[in-house]
Image (tube, rainbow, N blue to C red):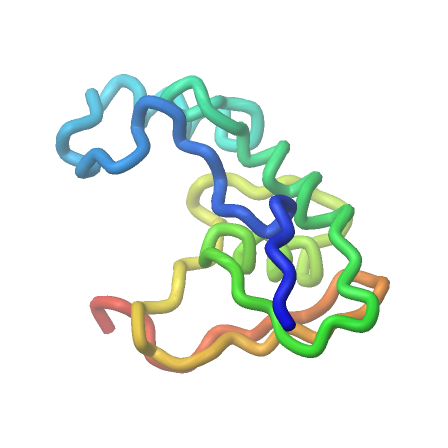
Length: 122
């Protein structure tokens, strides 16, 4: 049996969704970096909203979680830095596709997912 939970969705990038990074005006990306937590990329969801969703999710009784890298990065950030907001330079890099699973303990508190050693571009 599986359950689809909207709290596990990737961050909503609004009008940026599906676009290549070089197709997004540099000024918009710079605005996001300057206000990394509150800015709404492409008019979508802010990182603060994603962090709130990740913080509120409770995996009580869940055996396995399949989620997008942005959501997993949010949980990892909350586990490693529960009392502060990230800057763009501090945000964890996403694991490369097919690099292997990230482990996420399903429990009522913030879990500690760990990225595999292999990262894209390394």
